[in-house]
Length: 63
Image 1 (cartoon, rainbow, N blue to C red):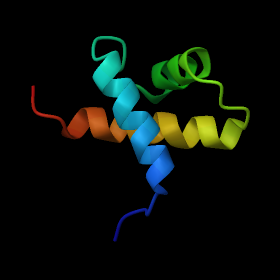
Image 2 (cartoon, one colour; image 1 turned 60 degrees about the vertical axis):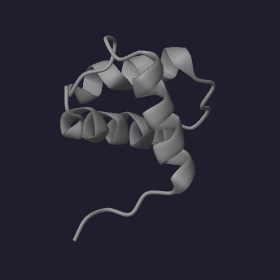
Image 3 (cartoon, rainbow, N blue to C red; image 1 turned 30 degrees about the vertical axis):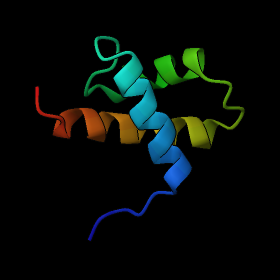
């Protein structure tokens, strides 16, 4: 059983990873800083959820 995430978290994270493929990585802390800079997300919880999904998505991508 995995975590269920809202569609807007997935959409934003996937869009960021596709726009900036060299900037994002599997490192959550790095992704957290990037999400803070690249988006206007006001909530810390939302920022962390987007960064976490971006990390998971980046790890599962085929390069």
